[in-house]
Length: 153
Image (cartoon, rainbow, N blue to C red; front, side, top):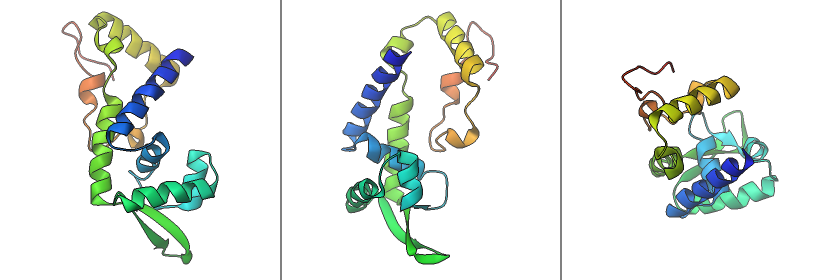
């Protein structure tokens, strides 16, 4: 299991690199996709790093026009971060790349893929709706009919 996690992390780093992003930068973009602008403190907590590290990540993403800084409505001393239109576009492409199944999975027979899908769902449950990328249609990945049957997910 750990081998699969590290292999996937390497693939995700390669996808992020296609957009000249590091994994922490890509993660920050994903954190911003669903909600209102987030504070630097909440981003630091989600990335499990110091706020000073977040400042550097935010600076680089802002320079590229992917995010914008603002102030919290309730306290203008608090800096908030949100996605720009360009940031949303890059995030959509980035997420599509992250969701692309690796060759090792694409090469498996459909019966094995169905078994794997069922085991993962049994072990971890379904992803909450707010964890899916709204710009990416993932239904084709998890609900592809197998052997003429309809997916249960």
